[in-house]
Image (cartoon, rainbow, N blue to C red; front, top):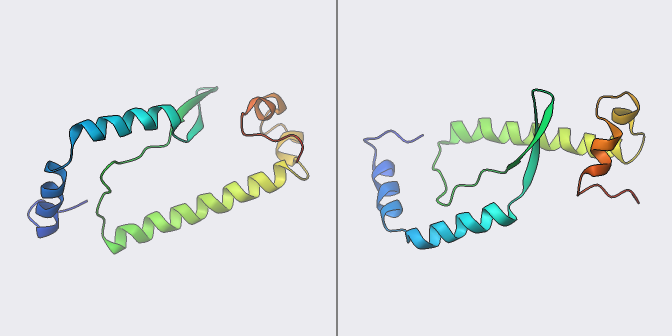
Length: 113
């Protein structure tokens, strides 16, 4: 995050204060309706959540971005491995890691693949 006394912090608030609140609210409503959703497994249940999205991008340092980038690369790799397994050997289902009915109920699951 930005240090409060830096020039970048001041610039961020200048930009933020100039934003049209009505447009921001419109965008938030659009994202609530059409945003990318994901399921979070918590306490034995899957909870659908929207992917968080900031209307005004956050300004982060190169060091912070490096951490974010590594995490994104890790997650993309995990997602690709999951999809490859799901649509080939399906070990994740056969070994009861993820129930078949959960996979088949997913709106994005394409059985024909």
